[in-house]
Image: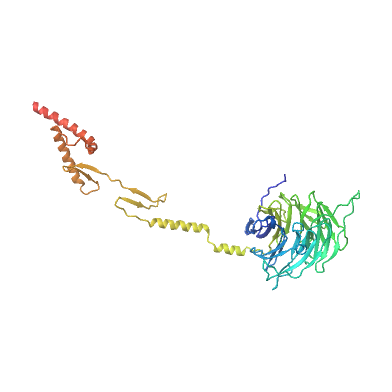
Length: 496
């Protein structure tokens, strides 16, 4: 199991990075907050397709008309607009056009988009691509061409190696010299303008037993921007070598770093420091003036590092690899600033140095605050509730809108109390809210007196089969008690 160290990420300064993966997707990661914020994915370009996996990427980081070049697994080079992801042109690899062979046998392993060749009225961009079998070419794409029918200008093609497999290439700051290396081939330096080899490395001397190691170079870069004669090459045997093409063919300095092959290397702006990434996720920096290890970066990655890029202005680097994480590091403290999980195995990362947060701040200021919008909607609802008033209908229902705790309308129904009174003609239903309530009370008194007189005579007013007689059972019992009292008095009077 790989070693994983959890370290807190304080956040990174405003940054825009573009990553590519094995499913052919291009993801844009941005950090907008100042002075430090969390990086997150803001855009994803393309559809997932393993046959169109992106192997190499290169960005012409220009302030005007920038272009992003992608080398795909199906043998094409696609030019994109790095600002919105629009496809500008699609060009086939030089080896596929000439031989017409299978793409899987000779994929594109090296790609560089020239920055100094600014696009004019007729040229969209110029790029250098090289296949695994060592077929390199420099081609230009016309600006009027479309993505479906690109107009490719004249190109220069040459063979970098006859044996072995090419694995990397790198260009100097002036974009006049190119370095190539791979498995079974030594590092060699070429002049792009004349397409001629000007220098080739020589294998180191054998060990004490006279055994020579097979050349296997995995990554390389130019150490200084002003001097193309000093180059740094990394091997599959975990070695970092410094070559001086003006003095000798063998390495000047050779340093071993741990036990895993080195997969990526990039130079620093100071001209003497390089950053390397290994196949086990170790990231470190070396001072090539003395060959000493400056330090390792805290927070070990859990997968092979495949690409490292240095920001041209800010003191930070970005790395990505097979652990599907894009990590931002501080070069001064060697601490991680931010990490973004991107789901797929990553193959390359580039940084847009002309990214600014001014446009994003303007768009945010134009958009209303969501909290203010919520408050406005609540106020509107309250106003609607206050304006709802329903008058009393015939059934006595009323809708009440009160500012109580629940804030809900309460409905109350008035219950009608019905009193049944018997008169000579029959039964009469009287509402207590009626204005004739006094007359009803008088009628009740008359009925009581009438019942008392009838009971004395042994008669009853109400019919026992009548359903309304049940209502007055309690009243009849009381009246019966009264009638008994009156009967006793009448007997005493008779005896007297």
